[in-house]
Structure formats: structure tokens, C-alpha cells
Image 1 (tube, helix red, strand yellow):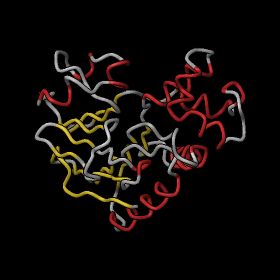
Image 2 (cartoon, one colour):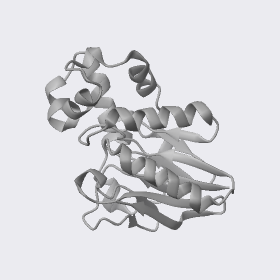
Image 3 (cartoon, rainbow, N blue to C red):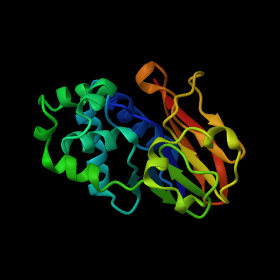
Image 4 (cartoon, one colour):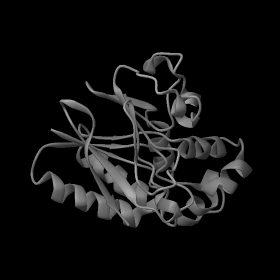
Amino acid sequence: MLTYAIGDVHGRADLLARLLDRIEEHRAGRLRRLIVLGDAIDRGPDSAGAVAILQDLQDREPGTVTCLMGNHEAMLLDAVAGADRDLWRINGGGATLASYGVTHPGDLPTDVVAWIAALPTLHGDAQRWYVHGGLDPARDAEASDRETRLWMREPFLSSGHDFGRHVVHGHTPTRTGRPELRAHRTNLDTGAVYGGPLTAGVFTDDRGPPVAVLAVR
């Protein structure tokens, strides 16, 4: 079984479709799981398309496709609820509204909002924790709260903490366009919406860190 974890898409539905094709070629018929690390929406040109791709994948393969919530999905939910709408807009929410052909968060499709609201903030397997932002080094992984999982950068990034499983995350775009590979964590946000590639880490059931990296531009 191979597990492919995909970094921040941010409305680049074109790159997401190409990366999924690349994953299909790479797995060559082997069993696989998909983990999408959050921030599928905002900033890029086609958040609606990215969400539609992910919804379709989950509908077809509910047991093998896991999409996580990112801080941008959380901001969308706040905006729909009437809170911090300007904050969401200036952080790329306007592009998401435009991709759905609406101007008000309350006019977003109800099935999309419901899908986003149901996204988990943490996923684990025997070897790894998957999260969008990070985990609190002072707590066990499962004890980190929702805000931490969605927004954390420091002290998570610099702590080098061992959570007992390798942590796979996004949220903080790398400046090199390559994933950040550390002893106890892997950052797969390679800045797709800023001109970098969209990246997937390839993981096996018997090793925590990635055994390979796939990237498309």
C-alpha cells in the first residue's frame, strides 16, 4: 500500500488534476491511499474545480481518500457564518467566490460548505500524523487543539520534536519550491499558487518519511 500526501492546492485545479494523473502512473496498479493536507481553496483561479475534483474522489473512494481542513477552509466557514469576512477576502477568499460565480459567502453551494465543515483536522496511520499547519510540541498529537492544527508554525517548525510518528504537513510554503524533509516532519507546501510546483510525498506502510516525491508545474 502506497500513501500519497498532497500539499496546498490553493485553487490550482489544473495542477491537482495533473498531479493525480502522475500519481496514477507512479502507483502502476498498486493499492494506494490519498491524503490532501488542506488549503484546497483560495488565491488560485479555480477553487471550485479543485473542490469538485476532491469531492468526486471521495465519493468514488470513501475509504481511501482523506481530505483535511486547512486554515483557509476554516476562514471560509467563518465567513459563511458572518465572521471575519474581510479577513477571508484579503487572504484569497475573493478568488474562491469568483470561481463559484457568487459575491457573498452565504451564496456558496450548500453541499460545498457542508463538505468543508465535515473535514477533519488530523489524520493518522501507523507511521504518520497528517495535519495542515502543525502540532503543539508541548502536547501529544491528538491533544493539539483545532486552532493549532490549522494555523501552527512556531514553535512546531523549529522544535524538531518527535511526536512518535512522522508528521506530514503543509501551510508554510517553502522558498525553494522543494519539500522540506526533516527527521520528524515533512512539509509538502511548495508554493503551487506562487509559481512553485504542486507536490505529493510518497509513503509506505513500513517507513515514516517519504520514499519519493512527485511534483508538477
